Image 1 (cartoon, rainbow, N blue to C red):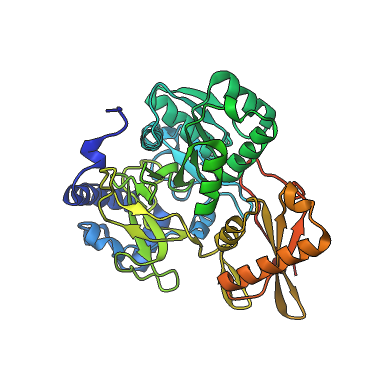
Image 2: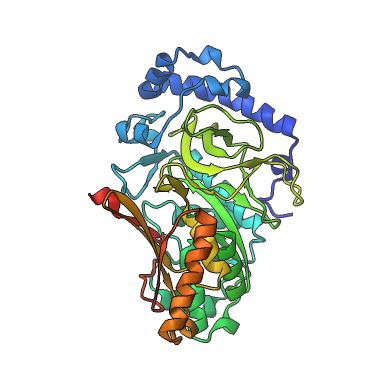
Length: 433
């Protein structure tokens, strides 16, 4: 039994998990109320005091936190400990506005790395593995999180970071990397590059831990087939800690949430009402073990469902589905909700590579949805009439999936810019007008 598969925690009864959460939530709420004026103000506005929170049954009484709150409170407004007790910050990219900065004590980092170690073990990792970390390092949480988790486990860790694909592949071959950690879009690019170089038989990978962006089940199957691995999902947010908030096990039917550290809820994204078990809605997290940055009822904007059924792997912690989209990033085209994952599913089912771009414009007060799709080299050799037939087939398939018409343009292989980090799938030009 590996050290970071902790059956006494990960296989505990639902009653025990709730008891831990009750025990940890109550003092966390009081500490936040006493040390974070920003959140205390939100509680007072709602007429809630720490005395009103006696267990997780009272969680719904607390106000939500959103990314906008984190921006308003930037940089120190949600810090719950003296700054001198913090040893690190991590940050979001800031591409959609003011950066979100998260603070960590050494205790916070230890717990975060423990969660990531659990994820590696769930993917079959041991101290004998070579963990190849191709997530970005620096302020981005991906690299530091999986790097720390690998160290906790005692695996040989390759801190590759993203980029320099030739070197990535050389080290995979020379050092015998067995577990790859990166974004799914970069994993797909690496697979494509390995096959092109004729090095598939020199790769010793057995598993991949992929996260930081949405990816479909079809994309998973494509990566697994090309690299000959089992591909595991991992989930996290900078605001909550980073990767390792939840992770897949060998059953690959949902990601186990580390419920001894995080309490999940599913709410109606429009009303904020907590939804019954099994409902699809927005995921909300409450941190119950963090020192520096313990967010309460943080709205992730990720749309998913929670599954409390016993997992075949034996873990009892609730599983969250792969996020189906984001309530804030979801495209609304001609009044219809459109998720990029829906389009990706159609493309991969039709045999196209996972390289595409969605462009939304507005012409004459009407939305226009265009999907640019790379062809395989074999498709690219087709004559124009055959390409037109392929485009028509995709138009019909997308109409059946989305319920609206999309323009499809088949483009040359490798004409869409590859990403070594998060892939840019959507360009919404309506925001520029």
